[in-house]
Length: 145
Image (cartoon, rainbow, N blue to C red; front, side, top):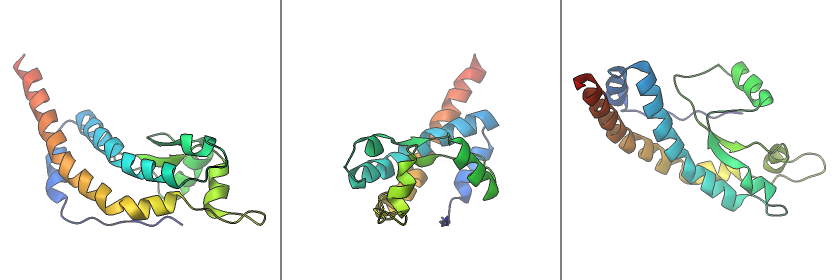
């Protein structure tokens, strides 16, 4: 089950992003989301079971999903303007997180999100302004040339 988080008060950021060209706005968001996803990834790496290091090493922040994840994501509602994912590409990660009939669950992603979500949302809100300003300045310089 995917839980959604609502963040209010970001309409000004949305308007400012709307002033940028689409490709610049996407790149700006991608930089901020990648940076903001790192605290979750670090927490998940710390919380991942350590029987083998493959699981903790496979946790990353990326815009890409594997084929199965893409299909599931598409079923859930498609794609937003810009998305970033934090997780593992190791198939054993699902078994570790949720367990199965032979293996008790050892969650590491959900506790990482629970511990870091407010920090991450604050980081996105605060650093996005700086990135929008920097992108705007770069665009202005290009237009002058």
